[in-house]
Amino acid sequence: MFRIRPLLAWLFLATFGCELALVLVTRPEGVSHGAVFARYTIITIPVALLLSSIALAEATRWLAERIPKYRWTSFACVAGFLLALFLYGPLPQIYAIPNDFTNHSAFQSDYRGVDWSRSPMESVYPGFTITETQIPSFYRWLATQTRIGSIIEYPFDVCDFNNLYYYYQHFHRKRVLAGYCHNRPQSGYIINPKPGKDFAVGLLNADEILGFIADRAKVRFRNMVDIDDPAALSRTEAQVIVFHKYIRALKILPHERFGAVEARWHRVEDIAFEFRMRFGSPIYEDDQLVCFRLAETTAMPANK
Image (cartoon, rainbow, N blue to C red; front, side, top):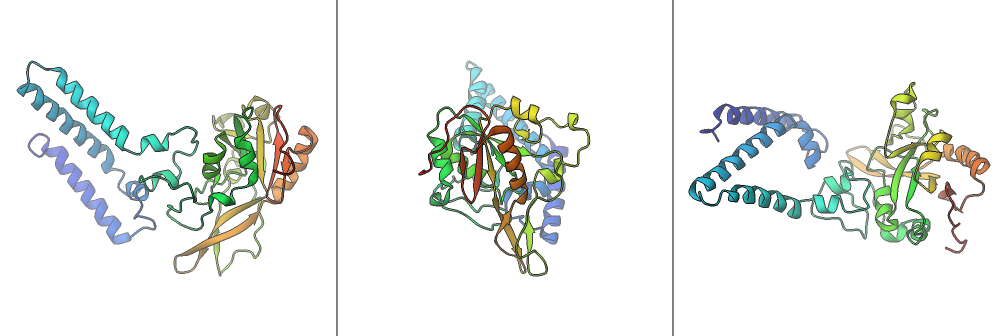
C-alpha cells in the first residue's frame, strides 16, 4: 500500500497511531469493548475502509491481468468476498427477524453469538442479568397470539444496559415500538433508598429527552410512538401497549463496582388511569405490568 498510495497509507498510520496513544494514556471507561474503541478512533475508519477498497481493487486487477480470458473473475472475487463477509460475519444474527434492537450492546459488543438462556451482560457497564425463567409470563402468552403483530413498550430507557426489551422480544416474536410522552419531561421514577454518596443510578428515559422539544412537528419516528398523542396511537400498527411499573436499573457503586436497583415508575400509575378511561380494562395486570388493548384482541386468561 505504501507503493500504491503512500500518502494515504502514511495518513492512516499517523492518525491511528495518535489516537491509539491517546486511548492508552487516557484509558477511557469501557474501551475494551469494540464499539467504544471505535468511537475513540473513528477518524481512522473512513481511511481504513478506503485502503481496503484499494487493496481489493488491486487484487482483482492482478487476477484479471493473469487470467485475461476470464474477466468475470474480478466480479466473482469481489462478490465472493462480500458474500463471505456477510455469511461469516455478525449480520445474519443481528438482523434475524424479529429484532428491533440491532444496535443494542447485546449484539454489538460481542459477535460470538447470544446465549438466549440468559440475558447477556456484554455492556460497557455490566450490571445485571436475568434468566429465561424470569421473563414475565405475559410475554409467554403474547407469543401464542397470532392476531397481535406489534406492541409498544413503555417506559423506554435509552441506556441499553437497563433495556431488557430485546431479550423479551426474542421469546414473544412481535415487533416492538418504543413509547414516550412528549409533555412529561420530568423524571418519572422513584428509587428507595435514594441515590447519594453510596451509589448512583444509570437511568435515562426517552421522556426526559424528547419532552424538552417544543416543536413536536420536528419529531418524527418510525419506531417510536408518542403515547400522549391520541392521533399517534390511532395511527400506530401496534395492537397492545405494555406498561412496566418497575424498571431494573444499573446501580453504580464505588471502585467500579456495579449492581442493580428497582426503579418504581410512578408515572405509569397516572398514565394507566388515563388509559383505563380511553381503552377500558387492561387485558393483563400484575405487580410488574399493566397492558392495554389498542386494537381488537383477546384478554390474557387470569391463570396464565
